[in-house]
Image (cartoon, rainbow, N blue to C red):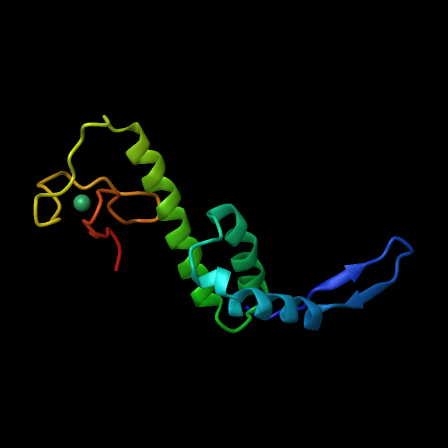
Length: 119
Ligand SMILES: [Zn+2]
């Protein structure tokens, strides 16, 4: 999708601010924080939404980031609900045999498993 961002002022005037939004988006995507996992799912979602709305470059990258952030959030929440004594991996850090527990984002939340229910 392609589109533009228009600012609607209280006095009824309008101004196309797409370039400004694009500049902010480029700053975010280009920042160290974006790729570091520092942004939470809630932080990253509006950025990905803006990219998708306007068809900005790297909107696929933004979506991947959001999907990964959602997975991290869900798997942390899931793991917090498991008994503290739960063992997930063997001595070689391979996942123990288990039934996959897929997050909304489609990846198994079992540590080090990596199974997906998509693609
Ligand atoms: Zn699994």
